[in-house]
Length: 182
Image (cartoon, rainbow, N blue to C red):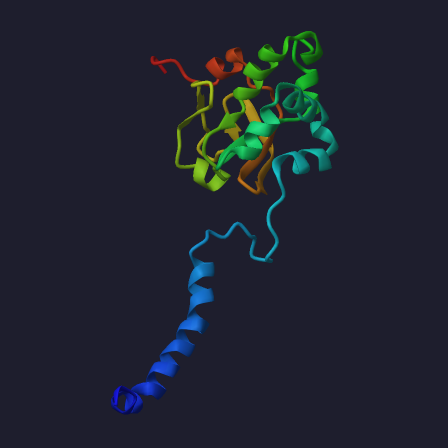
């Protein structure tokens, strides 16, 4: 008796059930954020990008020595201002002569807790690094603090890397910010 009453709508129920099985995987896939590039490939991890480019070997060694490489890998989103090897050679001290915690403090000057492309950086006059220092950003976002971007906008899995020509130290961070009288 119940089946007879439902008989007229059973084809409709079957169609709805079929539609749900087709729609379910699509809506489930759309609920997860996409980390892929338009080509369908995932962007590389930060350490892979730095290792691929020979001019960041000093930075790679310093990140690994201090364990900051692992922190970056777990960070949901960041910008790394990546000094080149020549930038590290221009320092008045060698990283190998410093304690690990001192190297870590220098490296933290180069991390911003938000992924920012140069286009996005143009909206800022200053940005704050993970040490709490404010770095001046030029109007065209080609200079941050005392550093010039030499390889901007390298996309990585969880952020952006900008290659820079200067190591950001306390001195260069302060020099890069105009005084209140300017």
